[in-house]
Image 1 (tube, one colour):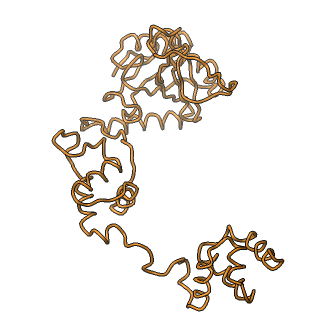
Image 2 (cartoon, rainbow, N blue to C red):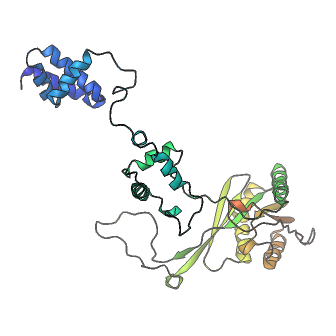
Length: 336
């Protein structure tokens, strides 16, 4: 390779990775034209291109430039699938717009509408197409990959909105008065033992930690029950973990733990505590023991009153909620 070719190769190596195909042809063609005799072959060797590619670049140098942002002339390349087959999009739309999901009489079930299955079905209907083209066509129809979303809450009570407006007003008034307001809920229970969990850890190569093949409760060393207490005004969470049962006593004990470790310091002048909770489990409004423990705790803690309300079901997927309140025996009886 001559010194002139070496210089072309060095210049191309500096900027070649930043050029598109048309710009690479233009660079090689410009070098070939200024090289003189044998320039096409020299530029092709230096830039790693075919000589025909350099010749094409020379022709393009004499043509009018393309519109800004274009690499190829308009109309270049193969016609699109929908241009070659005008009925293709209509047939594809018919397949994916099937409203009857899960019907065994249908050709495609909603869980099997993959690109490959759609391509196979289109081929059977006389519209052969590659499965990699199917997602492009679906996007042109306004479709995208989406997972299911939990938004259906079942039957709605006519007073549901008014109920939660009342709860929201109580929480807002409690916070405005400088009094604590918390939200409580039992989190996902986990088995304790040699069970597989998501994620990875560093271990010697070829020596992954061994875990049980099955996750039967009988194989567990115990069960961890996280109970969350969320301070609404401070936007701060607190979690107590139990190892026995998710009971009303455990629920109230978690609230008491939060009060001792954080509540007293954050709200030294507090005279009441507003609790928002759902309607199920250890803190359900139908659970008599929850009310009993909630009434007894303020007396033990020398707190004037405590109240509990439900929070929107759509936040945690529980049943329809109903507000309830509890007061210390010093201030009044329980009511709902």
